[in-house]
Length: 233
Length: 289
Ligand SMILES: Nc1ncnc2c1ncn2[C@@H]1O[C@H](COP(=O)(O)OP(=O)(O)OP(=O)(O)O)[C@@H](O)[C@H]1O
Ligand SMILES: [Mg+2]
Image (cartoon, each protein chain N blue to C red):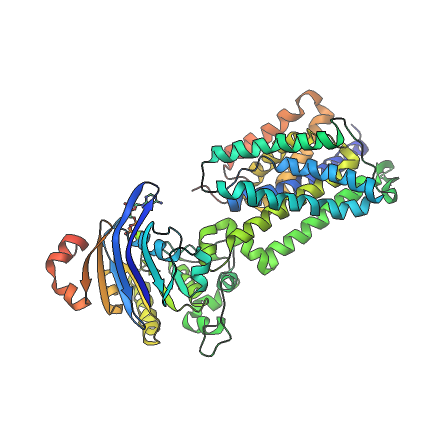
C-alpha cells in the first residue's frame, strides 16, 4: 500500500532522516512513536511531498510518489492530518471541509453529511470561522477535512497533542472506527496508550532512524526500548 | 477652508484612495500568499497607464482600453511570475528584492523606449468630461466615475474572495500555502493566477488614473512607496485592510497636500508609524507570530 524505502531527508544541509524504511499495508493501522525531534514529522513531510527525500523511494499503491508535488500526492489519496492541526482560520468550518473535498459521489464515500454525523459538533459550528474553534474541535475538523478528500490512506501527526484526555479518547474512538472500515492509517504519536489502542504494528524512531519495528504487545513488553527511546517506564 | 472645499478634498482623497486600493489589493494578496516582496508592483500600474495610452490611440476608445489594458498587464504579470519569480520562492528575500527592483528599471526603460520619457496626458472618456455640481461646487465627473467604479470593483472582489470557492482557495493559500497544496490544490497555478490578477488590477488602476494623473515612466516607483505603506497600515494579506488602508492614506495624503504641502509625505509616514506602534500587524492583519 504505502512503502517508504531507505529515504534520506534533509532540511537544507541538515540531514534528518537516515535510511528510513516503513510500510503500511492494506487495511492496517501503523503507529510511529518517538521522542521530540526524533524525525516523525519529517517522515510525514517526506511522504506527502512537503520535504521530498533526497534519496530513497516512496511508493503508494505501486506508484512512485517521492518526486511528485504535494498536491499530486494528495490527489492520489494520501489524506493528511498535520501536526498542529493547521486549520484554515480565515475559512468557515464548512469551507475548510469543502476545500479539498473530492470523490463524494462514490458509494460509501465520505460526504459532508457523513462527516457531520461522525463529528456533530462540526455541524453546529459549520458557519463559524475555523480559527474560533477550541483545540479539540479544531482537531476534529482536521480529521474531518482529511476524510472529505476520501483518502486511501490517512496520515495523522500527533492528533492528541495538547488535548484534554476526554478529547483524546474521542479521537481514539474515531480512529478505531476508521480502521474497522478498512482505512489504512499511519499514526504518529507520543501518546503511548493511544497508539497501542489503535495500531496493529508499531515503529519507534530515534534520531532519524527506525530503532524498533514490531507489534504493540511486543513493544509494551520491551522495557529497554520503552525506557531508552520513549521515556516510558 | 470652507465646508465645500473640505468636501471637494474629501472626494479627491476618495478617488485617490480607490486607485490605491486597486494597487494594494494585489500587492497584499501576493505578499500574503507567495511571501514575495514584489517591488515591481508599481510598474504594473505604470504599464497599465501606458497600455491604456497605446490602446486609446489604437482603438480610439477609452472603454476598450479600460478592458484591454488590464488584460495585457495581467499577461505580463503571469509571465513575470512564471519566468522570474517562481525560481526565487525558496531563495532569500534579498534575491527577490534585487530581482523585482531590477524589473522596475527594465519596465521603465521599455516604456521610455516605446513612448519616450515625457509626461503624456491621457484623454478621459467623453461621457465623463463635464463636471457635476455637489453642494454648489463643481466636481469633475470623471473623478466621481473613478470613485463609483473603484468601489464597485471592491464589492465584486469582496464577493469573489469571501463567497466563492476560488476565493476560499485564495484565502486558504494566504493563510497556509503548503497545507493548501496538501489538500490537493495546485497552489502553483493559484500563485500565478493571483499574481496575474494582482497585476491586472494594478494595470486597471493605472488606466483609470491616467486621465487624472497622466502617464510618465516614474509613476510606478512613486506610487509603490505609498502602496507599501497602505499594505503595512491595512495588514498583510487582508482585503479589508487593503481597503481601509487605502482610504485612510488617500485622505491623509490629499489633505496633507492641501494643508501642509511641504510635509504631505511626512503625514502618511506618521499615520503608518502610529498604526505600527499600536498594532504591529496592521489594522486587519493577523497577529504576528
Ligand atoms: N524546518 C526545519 N528546518 C531545519 N530543521 C528542522 C526543521 N524541522 C525540523 N527540524 C529538525 O529535524 C529534526 C526532526 O524534527 P521533526 O519535526 O521531524 O521531529 P518530530 O519527531 O516530529 O518531533 P515532535 O514530536 O516534537 O513533533 C529535529 O532535530 C528538528 O530540529
Ligand atoms: Mg512532529
